[in-house]
Amino acid sequence: MVENVIWPAAFDADRSRSEGRRVPRDLAITEPTVDEIAKAVQQVGYDAVIERDKAYPREYEVRGRVIVKDADDATKTDLLGAVAAYMQALRE
Image (tube, rainbow, N blue to C red; front, side):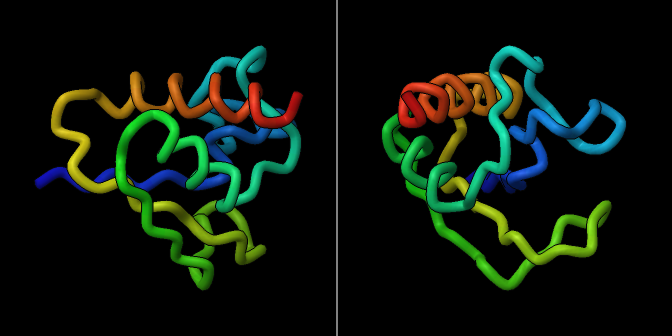
């Protein structure tokens, strides 16, 4: 069983790659939330667990994280790209 951890910083358009953004800037959004990430993960077809009391190691603010369960058939990069595309669609 594979569990992927997704931090909001991975989708934050205000961050650089070295600061933790994992998707291209054209797929990134401003101030992503764990609720948006979890909703997009469920739209992609995986189970998501939100942990709100966690802080990304490169920042002090507690924004939480999303644990994606049973994502055996996709790489993390593919998963992040699909989630980012759904998050953009949710914001429109």
